[in-house]
Image 1: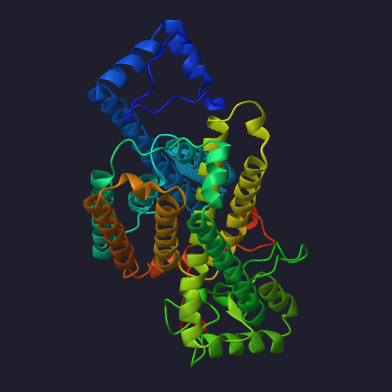
Image 2 (image 1 turned 180 degrees about the vertical axis):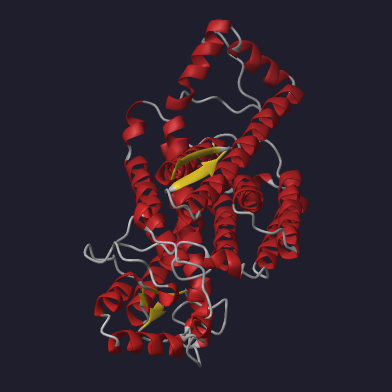
Length: 466
């Protein structure tokens, strides 16, 4: 390796002995391939392009696999928690398994998906990987059809087709050879640039302001959810008309705290039934009904315009948080892969890793807050639209990937981003499946998945009267 005196040409990027690539370098040295690859790639640009293109394709495969596993995780966990079963068993691949075991399989798939996406960032630029990862919505549609038996509606199919077209535009226009290796000193230089520092400051400011706004909104318009059944009443049967879904508001897209001009249709009958039970002296049954009732209404109602605005802010802020997570994750992994000696303990490595961990745990709180208030069908496209925009801006503005794009390539990439956003907007047009929503499980903060109660099918109260 030391005998090669040839200076690297413009088409040859010097290899850096990073922690994650030592095994690859050792293997190539033992096989005597490293010198051959360096000499031939320096003398023949075609070979160098083929090598970079191969790594480019590997990154796309890892990103697609990560999106697939993450979508499978989301659907599998929802399937495990929402499947109605008397023996607490859930069928999977023709085998009945415990509910929590299937849920744990979904959690493992989530970890595998995140790992695959992290690996993909080592092979391809962020502007490409962020767009390819948006195919998660397509995988989600496929797995939801398979496990949850959700219908394939026209908006879903149109959304998937448009997103796929946008991803293809980004893949076609993104050239090979964009640097994906950054040492700690490189990241410090990127952060020291006015454009890079301004972008990071604006992104963090938007996220922090969103957190404050969400906390104020949650405090002003809290959502009351069911409480854990008391031990003395847990063995009593669940009354049929004790579950009030969050979809009882006038606008089926609205959150549980949106204004409702009229009470739910069965509210008056429920009050009459409760009064009749108390008059009959059956106070034990009334107490049991109050203990296990699922209520998703609020003590205060928000104006419609404010609720609609927060319907964008909640999932949008979640997407921006995931954008920060992707930025710090790529920086951390790249620095660990390309540092040596004291460079691996530079302050930028620790700071990037810290923000990666913090934003990852913050995502858990955001997921519970966002999808506990708004419909998944409506919130998910906004979330991944924000993720895609943040990833694209991180690649172009922070990592300066725009320097390696020609004018027409940059135009096509931005056009592909616009097409993806249009596809996400089309996905919001798909109404929620009321039948599927009525059989779903409402997760509660102080109740574990194994203790969730699936309400009996709703019947007409008038028919139930003697």
